[in-house]
Image (cartoon, rainbow, N blue to C red; front, side):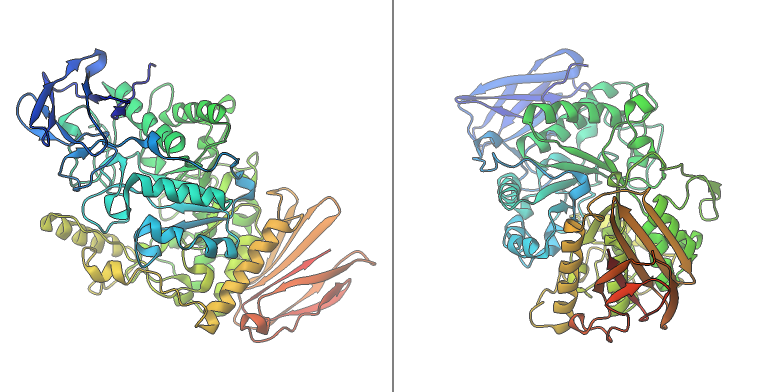
Length: 607
């Protein structure tokens, strides 16, 4: 397939405009600032183009179809006036990068940190994130994952309502501020992953259907018409998406893309769009000299997405998995509604740590079917796990975080559990200091009727989990957004300081311990006694044992070691330095010892 660049290409004295509009009989480039309307010339496959002299960055433009209505560019790089107004010409090549020495971070070394640009800082912008880079370095994370930044309607949104995939949200600072953020992160040895949405377009400002056959009528998603990846005219839609992915990694130096809800990307062609995307990204990585990663979000528990093409897969690098979250969430909260009805047994947490997927072919009562397949041949570096993320918090009625649903000691224990697994750990912004502010779902569409529909839709979704939905916060309210902002003030709060220091210790251990550095699922055993778990991991002569007690009472267990072996305690979440109730486990562990473990605590011993 021949790929066509579709966003404006700025040269020294001219600009080449190209758009895909097979539905149009004529297309004119409108330049309102110059009062010009310029006829575009047709190319093969439904493309239209024109090269215009004396066009500089900042020029506004639209495309007029069939001498009737005018619309912004579907591949616009900038929408300074929002989703309904003219697009803006910008030259992304004008940015001066300072990250020549940056080589990236492989997945097995990643400590990911998911954040939402609008609520992470008081400014709610890319500049606001930049100001926190020193904080993130102190914490120890080495990869940030940005929720989607493609232009959406209004100023408040999670980002999954984007309608201009190539344009960076104007209220966040636009394209060049994002570049500055990425550049600054790389200079501080922090990778940047960007969440992208290729399964649907948002509802407001969605004009692409006037140009071409972007949507499929054969399938459906909960969020809108699915993108046409396998129907008539789909070649050029695939080109649109592939060019978008390449742009982020090539022009914005993004290290990897998190692909939203790939289970709602429908493609029954011989070469799946995920495979085509992976092959193109591999080619780009070769050209840039940096590996750019593709990470899928999927609720199918299907390793086909991450298996090599030679093994019948699509060749993506990693995928999110919900099972660890669901297993630990139900264990500590006791919730059993909605999809949580399938979880709650201690052995399921053990399985999620050992095998990643709890459901790898078993029957699901919630889904009313069997689902999932085996991860036996997939290493831990191919799976991203988390105790919390934007979905699992934001899709709750009150947007409550796990620390608010449980308590301080439990929050430390589940943190430790995540970091001792052989998978890629991911934090959700604020959890590292025990943030208690909620994280709601929020929008700010310009159409009041659309906001009302969103609010009604959310209440229907909540009914699977909550009997009374009357207390639901309206997504379009300023309260939903403002209350979701991080509270910070870590230094002035003893509990926050203790939690932050505990996370720093766990991250340091994860990055430096010779066993935890290796994402090895095979050299691992785990057993449970009620809600007390004992996990052993080893690599060569190195060994680590973690005891995780989720009970609300002290637990005792016998320890069998080699007769001359001694293990040293390296982490105890109950320590008073982390505002715990006090340590009761010995500093040294020997054979045939009866070990007492503080309630709601994690203890880690190392050889």
